[in-house]
Structure formats: C-alpha cells, structure tokens
Image (cartoon, rainbow over all chains, first blue to last red; front, side, top):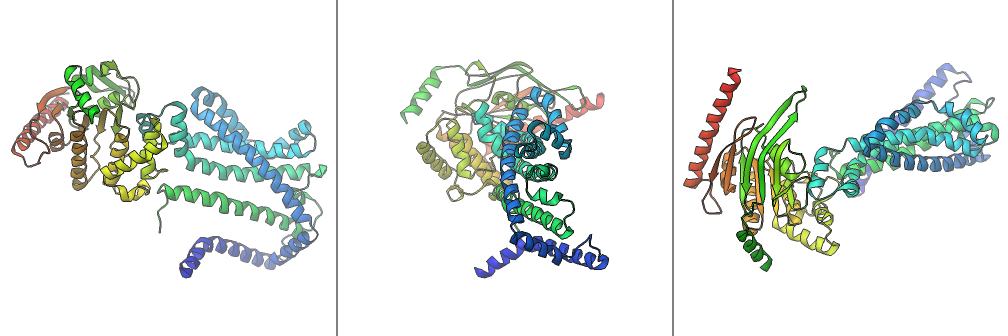
Length: 261
Length: 277
C-alpha cells in the first residue's frame, strides 16, 4: 500500500517537478554564464523572495491579488457560462452577439485600463473590471463551443427518452458539455490572471497594491521583480494543476475519456 | 397482470394499427447540394403487439423511416401515424434503440436507467425499484454502478435496452440495434428482445430495422423487404414459426433463403439500373 502510494506520487508529481527543476537549472546556468545584474541567479531571487515575505510585502500583495482574482474569476465564469448558454441556444443571438464577444476576446487587456480608470477612477473597481472583461469572453466562447460539440446522438437519445426543452438541457446537454466547459474554466483562469496583472501594473498609482503592483515598480532591484513574477506563476500553475487539472481528469476518467495505464 | 389482459382485449377489439405509414417519402439534402430520396412512397401498417422487421440493403431509407416514426425527422411528404395521429415529435410512448447504445457516459448504468424513469416523472423510490428489476432482467446487476465505458459492447446494448424499456413504452423502435455486435452478443440480445416482447403478451409493438435477413426472420411476425435506394416496399413475408425460434428451423431457413433470393435479384436490378445510366 505504501509502495503503491509512493509510486503514485512519483508518477503524479514526477513530470511537473522535472519541468520545474529543469527550468531552474537552465536559469542558473544562463545567469552564471552571463553574470549581469539583469539576469540574477535563482539564489538571488530566492533571497529577494524571503526578504519580501519577511517584510510582509509579498504576502500582503498576494492576498490582495488573490481576493481580486477570486472575485473577478467567479464573476467572469458566471457571465461566461450564462452568456455562452444563451448564445448556444439561440442562433439569432449567437450570430449577432458572438462576433462582439470575439472582438472582446482579441482586445489586449491593457487597452481596457485607461477606459476603466476613466469610468471607475484609479480604484479597486477599475482593476477588477479589467480582469472580468479580459476573461469572460474566453469562458463564453468555450461554453458555446462545448454545447455545440455535444454529439447529436445524446440529444436524440435524450429526446426519445422524453426530455424536452429545459429538461433536455439540464439532464443531457449540459452534462455532456461539461468537459468542454472545464477547458473554458482553465482558459478563463489564465486570462483572468493576465488581465488582472495588466490592471494592477498600470493602476498601481492608486495604491491598488497587489502582485502586479510589485511587478510594475520601476527602480526595484531585478531579483525583487522576478520574485514577484515567480509568486504569480507558482500560484497560477498550482491552482490550474491542483484544482482544474484534477477536476478535469476526474470528469474525463469517469467518462472513459482517459485511458488508464 | 389484469392490466395486460385488459390491453389485449382492447387491442383485439380495435382494428386500428399501432403504427402506420401513408405514402411516406423522405428526402435528404446531399452534401453536393442535390436531394437524395431515402424512402419513396412507403405505406404499411403495424398492428398493436406485432413484431415487424424492416429489411433492406444499406441506403434504402429504412433508418429514415425509423427516424420519422421516432419523431426525430419530419416526413418530406406523406404521413407517419401513431394510433391514427400524425407523429410530430419524440414521445415517451415510443422508445428507440440506436445502433450505438447511446448511454450517457457521465452516468452509471443504474443512473442511465433511472434517468429514463425520472424523465417520465416517476418518483425516486419507484425509480430505484424498477431500475433494479430491469438490471436483473438484462443480467447487469453486478454492473449497476459501472460506467458505460467499462462494459463490453453487448452489455452496453443490454443496458440501453433496459433504459429504453424501463419506462414501459408501448412501442420499441430499433435502428439496427445489434449491427455493431459480434455474433455471440447479437444472439444473446436477440433472445433478450424476444423474451421481453413475448413477455409483454401483446402489449408491446416492436419495429426493428436491420440488414440481417436471419435476424429479421428470427425476430419478426412480419418482415418488410425494401428495395435499394430510393427505398420502396418490395414484399412482405409473414413468419408463422413458433417462438422461441431456432436459427436452424426448417421454416426459418426456407424464408431466409427466399428473402436472400429476392434481395439478390434486387441488387442485380439496381446494379443494372446504375449501369444503364
């Protein structure tokens, strides 16, 4: 039992750990070879991280960022799923509104920042607005796609079993679309992070401090900047891997979409 | 029990067919932009409690006919009737067995059957009880909590049969339901289906589409043979042999070879038609 658990852990954590260690090794080699202050060594960044944790700037910034992120992401998912459903159900709405959502999707996050500041002032609201508007289009498009990719056979089977209207959607179409919606969650999570960082870097003037603010402070020593960036990456990847990745795998395994080795 | 007896009495007193086609034509748009006539001017009646097989070469429109009867596809012209009323949509009175089992992969075998009952508005307790009974009927008790992908193809189709019949429909439509199965699983399913149909004592009407002549003859009271596309009704065979039927029964073998002969002629004729073009 212990052995199999250890083996499971190795299989589970081996590949991501190898990736992380590989990155650090390459980074250390590059830093040593170039030896400029522009590329500090992993050790220097670690020291800056420890210092940032000690003086409280990193935990405080991380906490603020995560609260904003959780809120923006939740709102973006709610809007995206609801809008995506609506657009998947109604062809007229889809054909008229989907292009607008695509337009929002390809708008660079930074483009929203000046507008957000004009509309909301250099406030918390402006930052959250940028994160929401930057991530809900991905969720919307993924939801539309997920529903439209449900195999027609499931819909036909559901209808012959007596499911009509809303019940057909609730009992057959939505569950069938769930793996696609999970993919949308992962995408929206990435976009929410990026958009929030864009917002935090620019709106930092208003002390909307967060990890993006740390990242955007000119004149900070490079190790401090990289430490902030590393914190962003680690949190982003950890949530993606531990939450969405595992959830996605569970859903796929249950449906036989993953072949067990 | 008394319900079954009553329904037999009712069926006997009424001459109205359970299912009927009146000059049904189904056309489809082809990917090239033209139209393909899948079924042309097909008319037939299926009496309550009958087991009918629709037999024909692939592309003869038998699946289109079934889809129209299921309410999944509208007729291009003509009518499809259930108890004398035009069919416009799927309904709980008609269950469908597709060629693929079409079980929902996010539900367990039990969950799939329970969903069918839930959609019929049957309460949770009755749902559980009826599901267990059906699982026993199709010998899947041990697999109740398995996910569909963990089952063999034959077991999946048995689960689909249980799901289709759980809500007690009056009509079962089968679209080559055993077409994707190996010979053994196919025979097992044929037995299973015959058992259910015989057990309903005239309460259930089955209409199966197949291109397997022996299967049609073993299962059906009447076999409708269709021509190659565009599908028309060629001939009707009445099978009088006692049930359960044996594949090696003399009568069965004779009808099978008769139908084979007819189909061969039809194939030759359709090839000749193609060549003449």
